[in-house]
Image 1 (cartoon, rainbow, N blue to C red):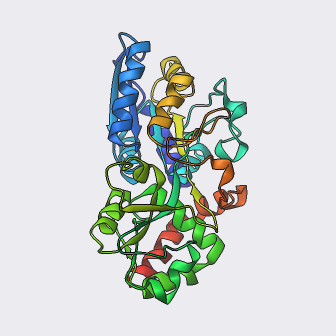
Image 2 (cartoon, helix red, strand yellow):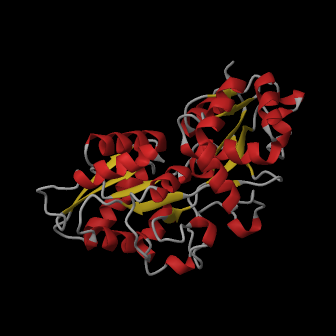
Length: 326
């Protein structure tokens, strides 16, 4: 906690800027580039005269850049939107996020937001299984069975060390199945490298014909690569959360608050659906090609899981590396 106190002091002292906070906004996000392009095109229509700057990268890169800027004297981002829920928990605990209750805050499920109004889910990606239909005639039904000998040298994941959604998936499966599960994955020759796009490539090339990957990646390939099958695991899909938060870059955060409201509006949430993610708000349909989230079994998020994973995330990553890469 001492380091976060220091970072907080540096954040406050680095907030001064000559830029008019009512005329431009910086958004750091791990959402895909096509999602950012779609959002940028639509949001500019309703915010004439405002300059939007986007920094798009993986969630771990977002965290590294933001943390580095804080340590250097002040974060550049006005808003953060990325998939590392546990990083936002750390920032919230350290007092680095602006408290703002959007008009739809009460409609967001409790486990998808922070009760003090410092962050909330903007979109819900989902981790599922995929397989190459030409190589796998009897696809797996669960995450758990991927540790069985029949799947030796056939399974791949992204790296929990570089991808927020892969870290969340790993942490959730470790909570439910223990480290023994990952020992079985290692003994099965599982490749755990890169992000979700790397998993897709390994499945397409048959380097590993089965993998866990975000549903949105697969839905984007509808009609483009019908060799990829989708499995909604019977032991549960792993729900993720693209978290949105407003930083304390400027004393005046009115523009960021207005942008937050837009992102939760019908226009903003329709952009979420076009990017094949689920909305955290009631009343919206499933993404095109996906079943309603309510019809799928999901692994359970709890306050204890969020707290424990946040507190122990470094130890969890170290243990994962010890098992998978020793």
